[in-house]
Structures are given as structure tokens and as C-alpha cells.
Image (cartoon, rainbow, N blue to C red):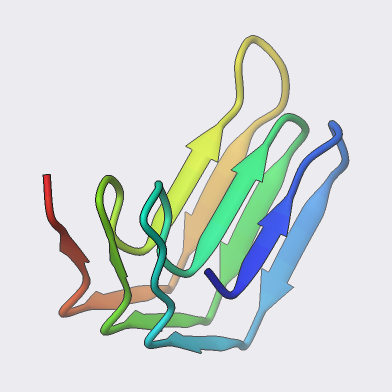
Amino acid sequence: RILAVTGGIGLVLDGLTFTRGKTSGSGGAVGFSGGSFQVMDSVFENNEAVVSGALNLSQGDEGTVSIIRTRFVSNTANN
């Protein structure tokens, strides 16, 4: 995994490329729990996980998710 964020914060990812992230859990590139999450003008490519190949978001009852002008290319979930 390239990035893991927990703790109910707000996170904005803008203009980033996440390539070849890998985990035996969820979210090969990014794992995020709680709070608000926004990704824009970014690319997730060739990431791998057991569940949620590129991105794993656990929001619960709080926060929002926005994905804007973002490409997901050749990501793999093995389950």
C-alpha cells in the first residue's frame, strides 16, 4: 500500500499518480477510513490487493467521497 490514512480527517489528493501499490489486505494504493475524501485529476494504475485493488474507503456514517476526473487503469482485486 502506498498511503494509509485513519482518524476521521479530511483528505484531498490532487494531480497524483499511484502505481504498483500492493497489499495482502484492502486498497492496494490507498486505504482511507473516516472523514471526507476527495481525489481529482489523478491516476490509479497497476495496483493490487486481495479486496479493492486500487482504493479502499471505509466511511461509516460520516464524511463524503468525491472522485473527479480520475482514471483507474489495470488495478486488480484477487478475491
